[in-house]
Amino acid sequence: KAGVTQTPRYLIKTRGQQVTLSCSPISGHRSVSWYQQTPGQGLQFLFEYFSETQRNKGNFPGRFSGRQFSNSRSEMNVSTLELGDSALYLCASSGVGTGNYEQYFGPGTRLTVT
Amino acid sequence: GIQVEQSPPDLILQEGANSTLRCNFSDSVNNLQWFHQNPWGQLINLFYIPSGTKQNGRLSATTVATERYSLLYISSSQTTDSGVYFCAVERGGTSYGKLTFGQGTILTVHP
Image (cartoon, rainbow over all chains, first blue to last red; front, side):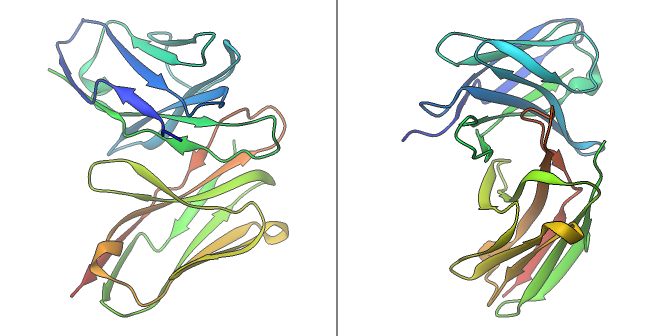
């Protein structure tokens, strides 16, 4: 089985712009979670989608949003970028519903905001 | 929310030594995972271990759910074991898909 894939792998944006990141889960997985990793705050949960519905959301401003498509692929969007949004963004998928909550992570998208 | 504490924060070993990493958590969980983050940032799954004991080669892990801690054992360490090790947990109930991570243990193995 192919693993979780994320595109793009690297991105450089300017303050005030917006960005969209993409995540394709493992085949058959319907849950996708997103995380932000920074040196100061560590790994923090952004949100989780299951069957196109956001079921859980972390403590991030409304500039951070996401969605999930019928094929379980997910996107996250950050609008009005700030310097502090520079981070590694990771997505993970899991096959919840089977009683196994194990999450599998993609390689991440490294976003730099200048 | 649930708290996750990892210890030690840093660990320096000589190749061949054994080590134990600890993860304490503050509430009952339905998911506990150990990860190794490689130099490129990807989180590599080591164990999915909400309870019990598992072994995979030189690595093993034990979670005592009733006492809210987990241990990761690395035996006969190699330089390739260097990196950051994370413990992450998910509470039951409505914590859908939300892993809470510890701050990590930075392991350095010298030849």
